[in-house]
Length: 353
Image (cartoon, rainbow, N blue to C red; front, side):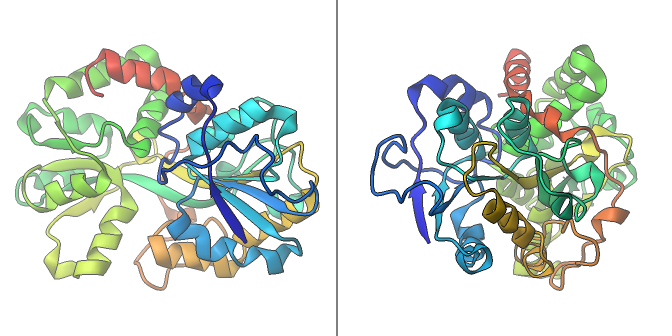
């Protein structure tokens, strides 16, 4: 299996910046994929554009050659960069499969007509809430938004039912978030979808008035809550599970709380995959997605990162995760998470970038 880093063409820079929150868990540059290079002829190699981190999914994708019966070439970058790259390449793209860290990037390609409908043998494996309504992509794992909190400073968080409750003036100066993080952007996008532009702006302005502390990423937010520098933080669930698994429950003072399903603060976003409509290897690309949804690989995601498996019957053997089907999740049409440009403009206008 060969892997490459990807350089985003200048013409797609605006869209890449707008989609930059789409699971930007890899960085780096490589020769422009538009150059001839040493690529094999179309149809002889399964080409995957992966927005998922190479350190995480590399061991999985290395096994694809045996599963699909073709040599595999993987190009890594952030999901937003890769979506922009694919939109620029259009019909000339050599990509067969897009493996995204975020549903928003998949939604952008689906709305542009660049993803082909998947066979029902694949879509039937995944609950309807976690796939495109037209079957153009499916989730491969899920992650939930939660509130991390310090039980000494803010024990009341354990009883919160909605995101509005963190706007209590008593929490002024003690709320932590990561303004450049993909998951925060996705949450704000869900807030816009759920409440409209005016409702989302009102919530964000109230949050800004409470002078929340900014951190580089979700790990730093959780560390701040765990260390007592913040009372409550906005993160994804798996950061806490990973910290507890690494340090032990007795060494972690922070707790997490899941909000009610009617609240955008309980959003479950997904990583997922779709087959490019221009692919010469539809059968192999479909087999690759089926491989990602196999019990074995679903178990890998559940045990390695504490992400929620999207296939029934798979549970983590490392982390105490309830099944996704039992999670009190807030779901929207995940394709709508593509509207990140509007979200970023809104965050900038209220001073939360």
